Image (cartoon, rainbow, N blue to C red; front, side, top):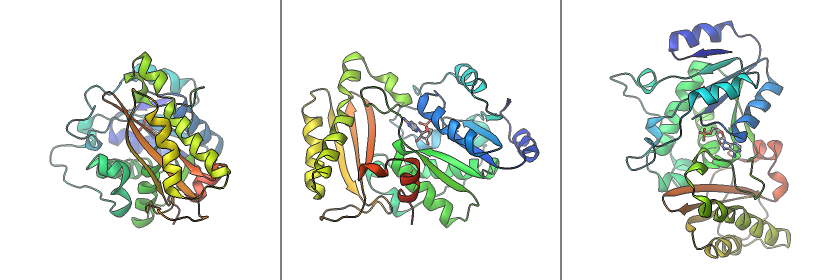
Length: 294
Ligand code: AMP
């Protein structure tokens, strides 16, 4: 496994890779969710490249950049055990040298949901992902459903800026109680961790209503809200129903697929989750055909 921190070294090693190259972009603190993306990349490609970079550009001034969990040696040990060919671990100075002055803005699809809660976040994401795509030249790059709006933003950027690569979307990997794996789950204390299962319970309650025939977005949102509001440690930030292709908010009954997403605070920790309705779309094939596919 090549572990590379400089751009010239990365370009040299990338040129030597032949065939299909699967790329997984991460911020480290690796968990089973990341490993599932890597497993998919391994199965589809001749070589696998993983990046680990906590991107300062996508954190707001009052967010958790300084305390975001970092343990490079642990991550490298995990990757060495999973048959990864190249790990790119740049520093912020390598990615953003003095004079760095270019930002990538994806417009409409980056405005609502997380874009509204975290101004500038998706500009930071799009900028670093564009750089990492140029540096790593993926055949396919793998993204997690958990960050559904990120998938939509990146797919729009790929299409609009003519990146010559495919995006695959991998279903959310969960703990036994349904909590989506996230590097930020370590911020939760024991009581908050128990309470955090309410996000998945909310999605399931809405999915249950949908299976019974409920199609009204407001009724589906109410089903989620009821579960979250029953949990005293949880503060619901938003629950939204959107068109999974365009992220346009849905307010009327329709039989088109829906993206149901929510953000919930436990103290200072923000957790996200989402699902597609109908629920049989929450597979790699269903997600890849639906989420951000325009
Ligand atoms: P991060 O390190 O949080 O930036 O995530 C790197 C990639 O892993 C992103 O594409 C995420 O959507 C994906 N990811 C994070 N958590 C999960 C999860 N629980 N299941 C599947 N993919 C995930």
